[in-house]
Length: 460
Ligand SMILES: Nc1ncnc2c1ncn2[C@@H]1O[C@H](COP(=O)(O)OP(=O)(O)OP(=O)(O)O)[C@@H](O)[C@H]1O
Ligand SMILES: [Mg+2]
Picture 1 (cartoon, rainbow, N blue to C red):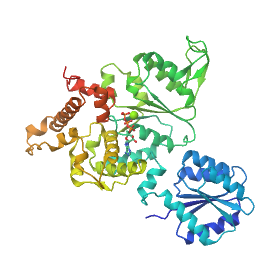
Picture 2 (cartoon, rainbow, N blue to C red):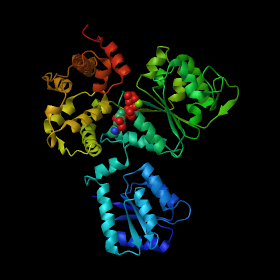
Picture 3 (spheres, rainbow, N blue to C red):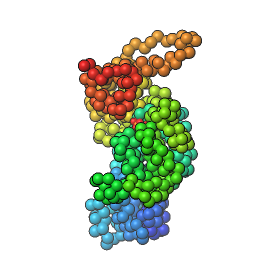
Picture 4 (cartoon, rainbow, N blue to C red):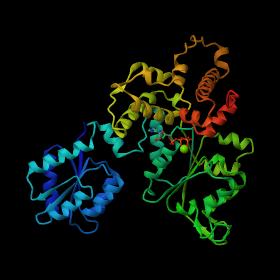
């Protein structure tokens, strides 16, 4: 295991040096900061197991730092270093969530005991993985070469202000990637504002995007900024951009090009500096061909495309993600399921995951919650999954011209998808909302698939 990292915060150079030496001797990796603000900066850049901080410091003091940590990352243990005579303050700090305190001057042994105790609470299951999940709920996990490429793309595109268009099926991680781009950009301190174009009534899209002036319509009692304005200096995430009504597309294009717009009912031009990231699970080019999506807007958004492949096309990621979610839900649900049975793993590998990572994540959450023994066993695998994977596999086909010529794989996959959806709908008594939830699909996503496969809603 890697050495746990400790952040030491003190305005006295002497104290920093002594502490660093003491902690290094115990095998910790140590970073020092001279005040609270510098500490916050380091906390944003790196993951620490423990923070040890002085109370009295210029700028942001120990109490202020503690407050911020309790807000951003409440499970990060903070040890207060207090001078003799200010113990009352330290007790106050404990009430506010500090892990423990040490009175200066302290012995190497005292420090060792407290830090070790703190590190242990941080690494609940004593594994690096749970520490990582604890520290970063937005981690992008994946072992496949395609995910490695996506990581590389995120690294390259983040520092720029280029517009990014993320495409991929539902549940593949588009939003996660959008957030990752923002978090590793120079705008990370500025807002990340999301607007889900599919979730807003058509007549409200304009006021949501651009805001409105007082009196613009009945009910507009105050002027309200829209998402573009809220995202000023930061990132605007246009989710499900393919669903944006046709008549709004031209207004959106204008606002993107000019970085300015008028609020609904307003005459004044509002200028903004916004980085755009858009996402869609539709084939936008197809939508353009069918006349549903403006070509000019498409090209304006598609400056830097990122395609996230469905999970079934990167099977190498299935088990890595399963183990990650197992750890995550063990930690979240305070369970201690040890692993996933080999039969279940096989089953996961051959299931096509129509709801992608979201489906896998939801399934593991349920499994961890329901597990009775130390392992996730086949008993916990829902029927719609075993049904697909247990069915005798088709005899291996000879790769003749005939079998390779006509999208054999695709039609096979589609057949499987249809089967899963049909079975799930049946088990849910035709309830689309419930079936969608089980499949890890949005209601709309499921409805689209039902239309594609000509599946009817229920057995009416
Ligand atoms: N590579 C990954 N590692 C860890 N978790 C992931 C990964 N990809 C997706 N997830 C998780 O899967 C869930 C779905 O991801 P996300 O919401 O980003 O998908 P999406 O592509 O935006 O889906 P939709 O099109 O339905 O909106 C989230 O809980 C996300 O945290
Ligand atoms: Mg999404």
